[in-house]
Image (cartoon, rainbow, N blue to C red; front, side):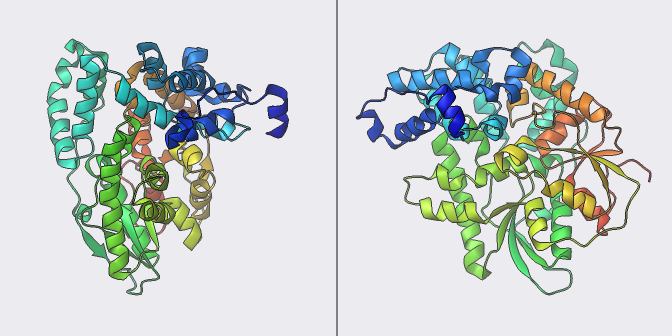
Length: 441
């Protein structure tokens, strides 16, 4: 890092003293000045890999954001186009030798875009529809039924993004799980070693409720009391990544209240999250509430947040007998880059008896990235095909992933069998065979 700074030189910024009195601009200034222009980030940036345009690389976006924030000018169409093409996969942060916090910078840029730029009517409508539907399971379920009925007419839709939304709707929608409702699950042996709250997710509880069921089974089997908190809702990720900071904080505040309520009623050892995109967001609650009256409470919840594989690694899993099952592990960006959890899922799968392989270019995004596959379908589609090819080459019996968005993306228009990592772990420890798993072995 130091040698690179000496070779390339720190980025110079031109914010005025008055501008730097704004805490957000002061943070942006600090982030920008840590960049040394080295360009290592371009090698791992998915949008740059597909488009080959410097403006669609982290370094290119950093320059555009710097100029936009320094001048205080409203965001323009060109800048917004390149910012919108960022997947927020955060691979650039894993690669960066200088520790540039690109995540906080791009989030601030999106909020600035939201405040200063008026998008075309269709863009505004699509984003409003997604924000109105996806975080609310009942609305989302209804929308999926509508999308299924419209599938035969998808080809006549005037906007490619509308077609992408319809095409992504599953052929069947599972029944809602009773485990999604506020309640508490006692440990199987009756003795609670840990008390945890489970974030059940928004889209996940509609598209694949088996993930939460498997999570509850494995946790209670290992001596956890699992609480589904009343008042819990969307983590706020969708609105946050659309630049709607206030809306994201409102949703986050509801979860903070819900989980602190669980803590006050009987203690809380962890907030367990099995959708890694949500996990990255909850772990950022402390930053999201910087300067707000609830900053300390938000930071407390961030400190309690654990991915399910992270928590299982801490408390320990029993070893399993070797199985003749080859698992290709897909590393979700929000897990490997956002939360820096790389080995735990693979180690757990090996521990319970699976053979684990990883595809080439495992650091590159599959193209799901929250709502990216609906708002940027062309780039997302190319990334999906590349990821599917690399997974097919693994010749595995099943693919494991820790994020529902990745699972949906990888399985789309393919014969690949994709299940959540926790479903395989649950199966190995006595739970049911995952539905997506082949009939044998």
